Image (cartoon, rainbow, N blue to C red; front, top):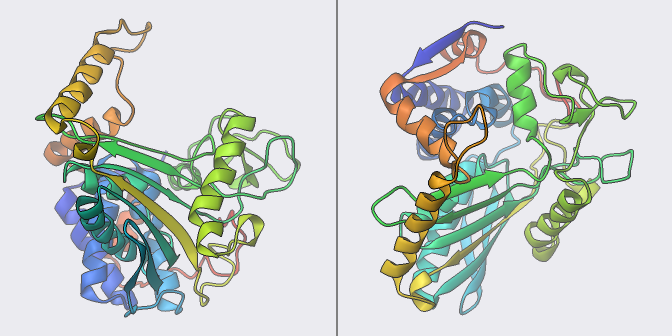
Length: 353
């Protein structure tokens, strides 16, 4: 197992910001992206943190990201609209889109905002939590390139197509959870590769369609709960892709094939103002009651507590604020080096090594 290096959240954020700027990303987009990535690592979602930096830097440097995107919002109805991302840096584009969705939900009671032509945008939890901090409920979904074997099939068609949800609580951090519609996100396998660790055999299959524990042999991801996860993948692709007139399924652009080309990915935010349906204080108190009742359920042997979905990430974040974040030494050495990128992703398939 590779040695880990401990950094404060701020130190990690600053290192990533400098690297992104060195790659060519303007300061505002670099700051937002680095903050997003650092929070991902701090919450224990290392699959969407610093492990992505080399890839991002390579795509930025090779022209696959619009450095100064012309962002615009096209309002299509009282509570609907399309945010045009101009293929800018995903974390920056989608953060701006969520600001619009929050404003529209406060104005209309509900907002459905589609984001068209963005790049890889990181963790969905990051965006929905922003809405919950404004005392709103939020749901987010996004497309990804075809990496998952459909239930009963032998070739990849849909992506990991994640879903995230958040709701406010009374006097506590909001409920936030974020999940891929595959057993694990591709980034989890990237993290295992970076740490030279095996993966569970129910995560993925190799080129022959057989389960594999070798993260470097992965050629297809498995949907959660078989046919049910497969259905969720399709739903996400329709709501975040086809609904916006974007490529769908196997037609979604590859993350790695040509880093000089823009990806044209789709994402959606559904934001709801609970005050339009119930008493806000009573709603938040009910969220707290739900959490407390879950905590009171006797845990199975070997587990100390029954956590609500997403709670482990929140606890990890609180710990990271005190103890720092651990990343593989190889990633740390890259971040502090003068190397912009290691030129290892371009021209690869979806499972680039």
